Length: 561
Ligand SMILES: Cc1cc2nc3c(=O)[nH]c(=O)nc-3n(C[C@H](O)[C@H](O)[C@H](O)COP(=O)(O)OP(=O)(O)OC[C@H]3O[C@@H](n4cnc5c(N)ncnc54)[C@H](O)[C@@H]3O)c2cc1C
Image (cartoon, rainbow, N blue to C red; front, side):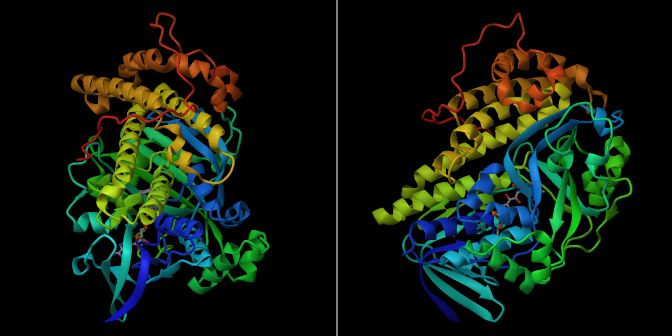
């Protein structure tokens, strides 16, 4: 058995969060020896394609140029939401809300995205080793001196390291090893099924949109929302046909800040990396409402095409890709998406990204929420090295940050699902989130990723949390009450009128006041009916969400411990 010499930090997992954390650490403290291990042979296909501003800013803060992202990936300029039902004939007339772009972001193919992050990490001096599967059962863990056993194609090896960062995604190697990973009995569970297509009709070719959008509708991650869940629509520039070595050469070239950024066709020719246009389309379903997904992913797709005319039209003439990605069946499935580690730190280790928690892809919070944990962890790790204290107690603050973030995102996600009960609820809760996000973003958008960005979209602000909790409470009460009276099949938006009334009372005045922070509303004059109810009890004025105050600890939402 071979051994790898001492490292200060060893990261398990060369996904985006592990690679970004390693790169930040190396940039901040070049004297640290940093190793990233991944069980895969090379960067490969993964789900998680729609990025938000926080994640793109994080990439740019490690000197990855925006132009490089423009060449590699499909442009994304916001998030679109349609309300759809069995009798909604087409998307153009469906109730719609768009969170217009904060800045340009991208729909990424993960092999290219993770490969670019790996090339960039290596450029700054991080060691990245593929084909190294960490086996925790044969490893020992101690603050300042852990031994990690890794399986390699030629046998095994041991790494000696002062600190371990678990960035192993849903594998969550350390939390599972220490018995603290929670996948069952997680409330409000959801499951996803998805496939890749060619020849999908561009939304921009549809005629008769009722409202104006700032950008072509293909440049938004589209969400078609219905009672049981939602459908995603994501155009992707796919480099999958490029050989590993060629893609690596192109990404190494692009990671070098001095190299000219050629246009996409020139890059493709220079490195012999063909690319093509494909679409990622998937369905995510609430386990308490959907009855079809146990029949399998293809049956689920077919069922919802029959049920929702807009979905059938979306896929009209589209060709499913049978073998585009290796080990990817034409229809993929991920059951019980929600999961979390009960403990995200221990003596000599901490967990970041999906290894700490993942909630649900609705509104694409995965990479941006995850990168907040990576950046926060980076600061705590540097402090821990400075103090010579790598024990669990040193990471208490990190643990409570992760818990707050998890709870905020979980509550926010449940609100989003419950808003599908009524078309206007979708726009109301989207606007509620957008007002705080845009106010926060306007305050921090200049310069590189920074600690303020870890307050993802400003939604950890105590006043936002307070209102969010109120919204959750109203929606939950109403959903339970309607559910007691009517089966899901019989429910329609009229059953949720009282919910709408209560929501308008709770946040209508606030949304009216910050109308200027919701461009889709201001650009579509016809939508500008005030939400505040004349008879509503006056609410105290909010402090603007961008005015960050100290965060208070908040009660639990969903069974962290
Ligand atoms: C259906 C679905 C749709 C999603 N859509 C989006 C989206 O649109 N936008 C978004 O932002 N997020 C999305 N996500 C979430 C997103 O995929 C994750 O948040 C993101 O991939 C997490 O990054 P990570 O670096 O934490 O982990 P990962 O990207 O999962 O990387 C973990 C790495 O660890 C390695 N590893 C695992 N075990 C070991 C081991 N024992 N030894 C060594 N290496 C190991 C793996 O090979 C892998 O490379 C989606 C998730 C799902 C389930």
